[in-house]
Amino acid sequence: MSELAKLDIIVLAGGISHERDVSLRSGRRVADALTSHGHTVTVLDPQAGLLADLTHRRPDVIWPVVHGATGEDGALLALLETTGIPHVGSRGGPAGLAWSKPTAKELVRRAGYPTPDWIALSKETFRDLGAASVLEHVLSALPTPLVVKPAEGGSAQGVTIVETSAELPRAMVDAYTYASVALVEEKVNGTELAVTVIDTGDGPRALTSVEIVPLVGVYSFEARYNAGDTLFYAPARISPEVAARVAETAVAVHTLLGLRHISRIDLIVDEDGTPWFLEANVLPGLTETSLVPQSIEASGQSLGAVYEALAQAALAGN
Image (tube, rainbow, N blue to C red; front, side):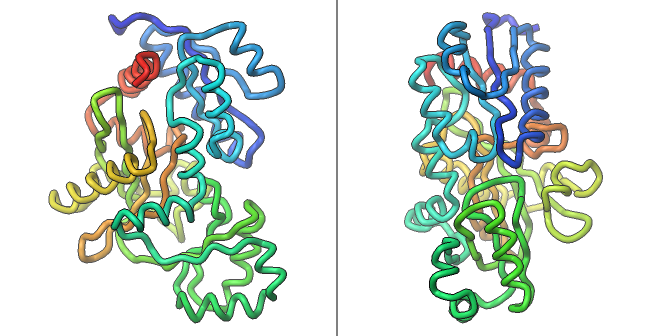
């Protein structure tokens, strides 16, 4: 049991996005870890009346783990700020920047960090300018292979690897199923990494990076949450020099986007050892198969201790 003051913590999990089930699993894991350190934890599903309930109860800390647009586009986090109750995680404005993959990529590129070339296309532009004409121009600017994904969202939903031009139309349709804007991105070959960045009040630091190796195809939604579908290496099988470069890039992106407490920065390291930024996750998955818990444990720390430290950092206003 921790000797720190015991806290009354509300974990927000669920919501109405495509990632509801994952969020509920994350919430239970966070609650269990904090309870094991003696804290009082209640898991709530965001719904009508939530803000009134929070204001009435006044917990010490709120921990949102609501994945998808419901929690990660910045709106919920901004509303939590209006309650005056400390919460774990980024504030609304920075979360909104990270939620938009094209916006995050543009900010990272302007800061001088590599990110794959891309084109962001709204469903309206795709329709109004003619799908065939738009795709022709996309392929002239970004030759295959490509990665097509929703410009907002997580858990690899709506993501397609496009190896030939004939596969692009279907990939666009799949991406538009989950968002009104599709991101068509150059595919960089290399080692896929997830880097957890933690800041409990003494500055952001990167934890052990996790290498992702899907057994079949890509790191899809199913591969993320079905045990045994993906191999993970923590630490990643990269040299110490590349690992240092990866950590520096992850911390720089976390800081550049104004993120707070915890984030997961996804990167590809090419054959030259250069890290390429893909996206930033402000409320990353915390399930039994998620990458952040693997990174924490590979760094020699317990989930309960790290989650407790994050809650204490939020309470202290860090």
